Amino acid sequence: MDSLDLVRQKETMEEEIVEETRNRKVYAQLLSAIKQRIQSAQVRSAVAVNQELVLLYWGIGKEILARQEAEGWGTKVIERLAKDLSSGFPHMKGLSRTNLLYMRAFSEAWPEEAIVQQVVGQIPWGHNIRLLDLVKAREERLWYARAAIEHGWSRNNLVIQIEAGLYRRQGKAITTFTKALPAPQSDLAHQLLKDPYSFDFLTLSNDADERDVEAGLVEHIQKFLLELGAGFCFAGRQYPLEIAGEDYRLDLLFYHLKLRCFVIIDLKSGPFKPEYTGKMNFYLAAVDDILKHPSDNPSIGLILCKSKKELIVEYALRNTATPMGIAEFRHLENLPAELKGSLPTIEEIEAELRTPEGSNE
Image 1 (cartoon, rainbow, N blue to C red):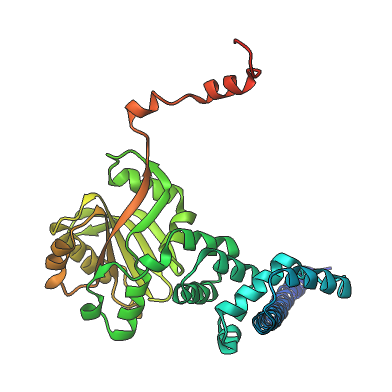
Image 2 (cartoon, helix red, strand yellow):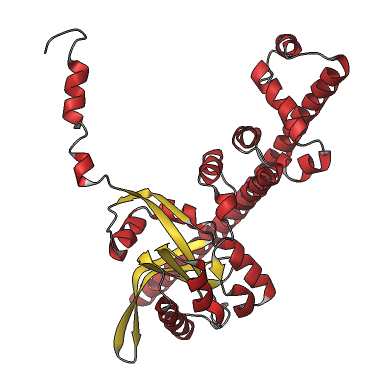
């Protein structure tokens, strides 16, 4: 075989490799597309099944409620129903006395079928049980149901948000959004910010400075993002900016997927001071010039302080035309040194537990 044949053979092999690589790529794209279609169908099927189940439970609860009111029956009838229904449908779960009581409470809480179909029927039954247990006000319960749908909260996340009082904090930050942003974006941005922010996953001393708080938030970034809410993407801590030959650093930088903009968070370990807004104005202008893409919306600033006086915040923001908000944050505090010494140590507790009751050790 001469050199020309070798060259041709090599070229043929290279063409075959290219074609094989192309075929694998096309096949991978096909496989990915089909998998995505199947997963979407599974999600739609699961949602439909869940909605039918919730509607069934609502109908059972409505029937029990109506008969009890008409006949004056007490709760004993529910216990009897649970036994008879479990006997009649031995392979069906969810027919216990406890669950029948939840069905009755569910239909009493939501007498309108439209609400069940459009809202609470879109979340799992376990979510609805937690809402019945933990939230008493109808409007607040409905708000959490809609938020769970929008953000895809798991049952545990729903409970966390309820226990953290998100409903009472959401949209409570003092902002300039209505005058600094167009209507659709300003409304969304305002609803995304809360006051106060709860950083109970942090345990810091009372005199912790901004860097301590910042380090703790980054260390617990998943919990921090959960508290911030859906859509926040972490871009960096102490994010560097070079301006006119001088170095500046942003405490925390995020990008928000829904708002399509950067979000700058400036942490302050003490009370709010008016001069903080000037610094944030500077940061917002720099980020919009240096980092913002032409298709992005104007950047937003959030100043988080340990405390604030609303009148001081109002005056500081009154003539501010850039989009920023002011809110407080809370975290767990370490025990004071004098109190620590009065508490038993882990070793002392363990020794006490090992000591037999009634001994003189």
